[in-house]
Image (cartoon, rainbow, N blue to C red):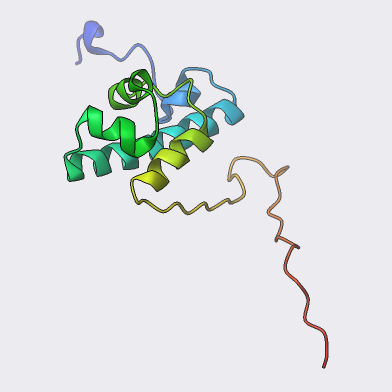
Length: 119
């Protein structure tokens, strides 16, 4: 029999943002920022850039580069992080799909494609 002290006091859903009470919108934004940040950091480590190099390359102020390297990206916009990624030679792909947890959110096919006309 397990000791009562070893029993988990909280069962997690497997999603840290959900566990912390983030709204679905806040969780999505945080996940996107995290994914972009990880790609940026991997590229920086791969290229062995120094902070002084990054200030010039990213066209950013030193405190912003420092925050980026420390993972403090909560105040940075997704656009800003994507700019950093592009300046490091990274490409971004965005895939959007319907949430599996909600029937209210239906998948809609984009209608911005130009229709062909008969010649």
